[in-house]
Image 1 (tube, rainbow, N blue to C red):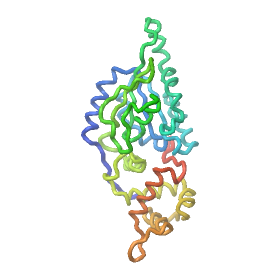
Image 2 (tube, rainbow, N blue to C red):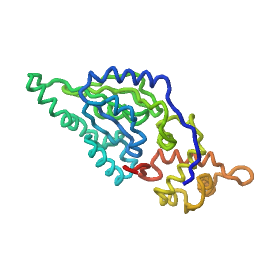
Image 3 (cartoon, rainbow, N blue to C red):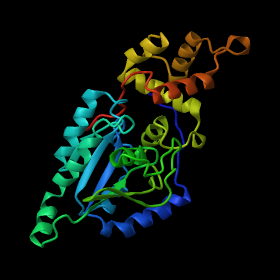
Image 4 (cartoon, rainbow, N blue to C red):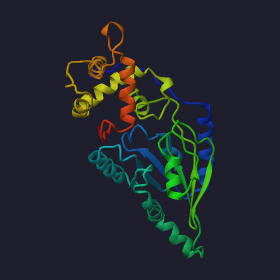
Length: 288
């Protein structure tokens, strides 16, 4: 597919400070919990975290499973387990899967708990750092685990700025951290995936081009979703802008001269994907 070229970079200064804080605090925790967007586990996985958290037991949370393709989520679950990581699937907004978090942490740290017991430290509090990119649902997840509004949450990327220790129960504390991205995306695809799922602000990219490239991805992966939602049969020879135009014409997004308002259609496409109106669609599969 001929994707349009885009320049996407996103690394605000506060994220540099956040990364230093995470490095300094890691020695205080027993394990690291990494929250990923189940729709884009590869692109929402900060590669720096493998280095940052080296040597710490790891738990991967596949969040937003309510928006992801269940069959693809199952593939990602198996993939991360094959890397030796413990995996938990959840939807932080509804709370689905969240109750399994504390047992999963204790299972992950079973050896450490036995060591504490052998040293006479029964009941010693486990401390877990929660990491993830901006707007992946970290604070929402922590609030569900805690059963109260303990962490600051918001719809805009980068709401959490400082570290927050959250008391969960007598034996577990979580450290909520600011979302961090890496200085430069390895590929345009990673940047686009983060933009499509709202992990980076819309202001840093061209929405029309993003929408056009997203149309091409949907045509390749979920053509039936385009037919059902926008009443078009995606032409295999059309470029992304032509697909946007066809969908916009069906929606009646016309401007002077009978031309289609491409910008409006691109905004509609991205908004409806965020809201789950196109269905449960995952945009990445393992080993692809």
